[in-house]
Image (tube, rainbow, N blue to C red; front, side, top):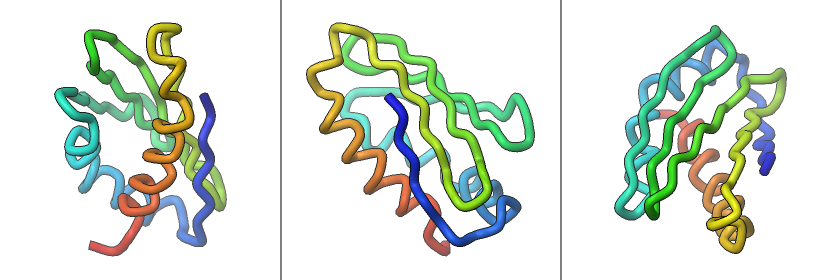
Length: 98
């Protein structure tokens, strides 16, 4: 699943906000955990555990948009619309000024 969130910020600002607020992602996954790392300057990798499933996702910083790539396993595919909506809503909140 690919979810793009448009923004008008420069990538340095986006990167700083994601790094300072990435711990908030787990707050929106009931019973889940999230571990993040930055394998490159413009990519945040996420290891998500939720509903007994392991998901490896990534967030790419592109000019004018933040792109979440979340490959949902078949056991969770039925919740894709709900997950995409939550990513759009919470992704925007991660970008807002502290």
